[in-house]
Amino acid sequence: MFLDVDYLMSLQYSGSQGTSDTEMTFPDSSIRVENYLGFAPFYYSLAYSMMAKKCVCIGSGGGFVPSLMRQAQIDIGFPDTYGDETIIIDANLEPIPHPDGGNPLWGWQGHAHWAEDENHPFNQRYPEVKKIIKKSSEAIKDITFEIDLIHIDADHSYEGAKKDFEAYFPKVRKEGIISLHDTDSCGGITVLIEELKGRPDIEVINLGEMVYSKWTKEDNIFDLETKGKLPKDFDPTVRPAHAEKYRWGGLGIIKKLS
Image 1: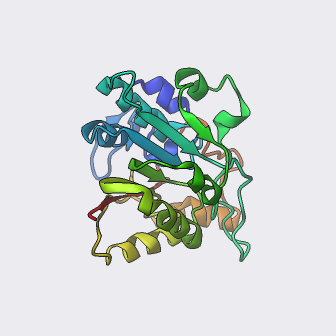
Image 2 (image 1 turned 120 degrees about the vertical axis):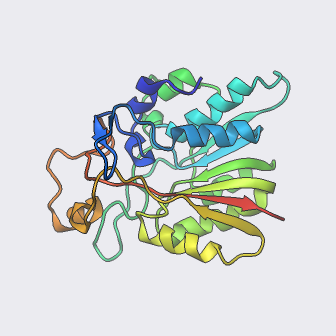
C-alpha cells in the first residue's frame, strides 16, 4: 500500500507536497505529529478512486507523485492485459532564473533525480513507469491515448504552466482530472488557477497550501532567497523535508466537463 512513510520521505522534493519528517505543530494548537504525509494520501486516492488507467506526471523531482499514481494502479489490481500505466514527462533541465534576476526557483525547480541514478529508490521500486525525458512541448507527440489523471508540476512560470495546461487538456478524457501544483506559492501558477476558474468547460477547486505554524511574510522561502537570507544549509531537496515555519505548495484540482 501507499503508506510507506520512509520511502516517500526519502524522495527529493517530498517537502513541496506538504510532508514533514520532523515533529511539527499544527497551527493554533498544541498537537504535534511526526511523519506527516501532506498531499500523499490525496494523490493516491485520486488515482485509486477514479480507477485511473492512464496517469501522466509532468515534472517529477524525486518521483513522489508518480509513485503514488502507480501504487494506486497496482493496488487496484488491474488485469495484466488492461494496459494501465503511469508516464513521467521530464526534460531533466537545469533550474532557470527569473528574467528579472529574482527567485531562482521561478521556472523549472530542478532535476529529475531518478534520471541521474539508476539505483534511485524510485527506479528500484517502480521500474515499469514509462519515462519520457523531453520537454513537455515535445513529449505531447508521444501521448497517443486519453489521459485519466495528469499532474502538472514542471515550468512554474505563468507562461510555462499555461502552455502545459493548454497542450495537454485536449488529451484528457471527459471527466478526467488535472492537478496543478504550487497554486498558492508561485505567482504565475496562482494567476493561472484564478484564470481557469472562469472557464465553463471545467470545474476548479484550489485546495490551498500546507501551513504548519503561524506564518508571516518574512518566513516565505522565496522572499528569503531573493534577499539572500536563507540559511546556508537550507536545501528543499533533502531531509528534513520541512522547517516548521516554511510553507509550501497549494494544489489545484481541475475536472474536465466536456
